[in-house]
Image 1: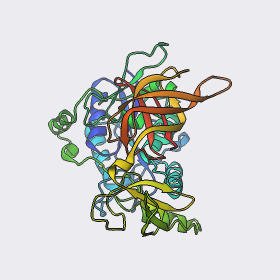
Image 2 (image 1 turned 60 degrees about the vertical axis):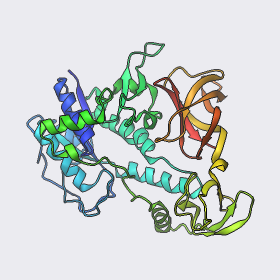
Image 3 (image 1 turned 180 degrees about the horizontal axis):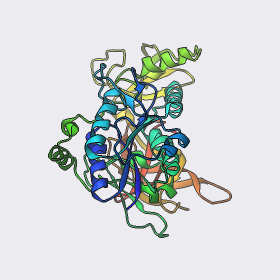
Length: 399
């Protein structure tokens, strides 16, 4: 069978993915991605914690591989991922399964993601760092490492499927995971199409309860571990503080404070910075209006945060740029379903490709006309296009 590099986060999903890959006869190398944002991380002696199946010493010297970290118990009680405690969990699973396990230092790549996160919030857009992590690291830098150790595949614990061949017979099709409640195909839309044939997603045909039951049957300590629900480098609800602190460390004195106004233009109050708000937000608005109000628009130029009722959130169109196609790129308008947030459902729409590349004819943008109004269209989020369960492609919402 094949040599596979598996991203191991220390959670139940990637842990069971490791077992399933081993069960299929693959030679699995577990990788924990260090992002430089955790505390008290040090390195063990070379080879510590690895099995007899560890890669050769030449791989360790030529690939930029960081040796396995010594980790301490998490002290921030953060339900995220990529912490020291998560690394310890991943290492124990790798040891139990008898596979080599290493930590790669991706601090520079994560710094790029954090810069993107800060820039997007500062420009009144809502970033999606998890998609960028998939694009730039898990299915970007991790492929570079896989090539350096002659691995044929990169695998993750995402709930999505790769099945069959597309119309050209060249690449598999990216499909929703079998478990509708856990489907993660949305966050994979940005993977480069040629990489689909080099990816393995072993959990795609399973439901989450079965994965937890299998972990318990295997005696894995992570069987009951909670799923990560937060961005790995910032605590929930603290993105504004994080953005301001990061800008201050960079010597950026940008003032993003301004007025809170109604959709009619009435001044309701003031805010400390647009980075504290996102489209569709209902709580923590900074004003009390006696009935539910939502953020319906954020203007970076005027620094105004505009509030309205739920009906004011309704939109029937959007435009998206940075299009990435995982099926044959369309040349004309077509019917599809479009999903505008990770935790929303795809809605019927007409998708019209625009801004075709002069040499290849591939559309770099697209417009979406929904058959029924949708709520919470947020610039900076992804608009992902589906035909049934298949991901056709997606792009970044402009407006």
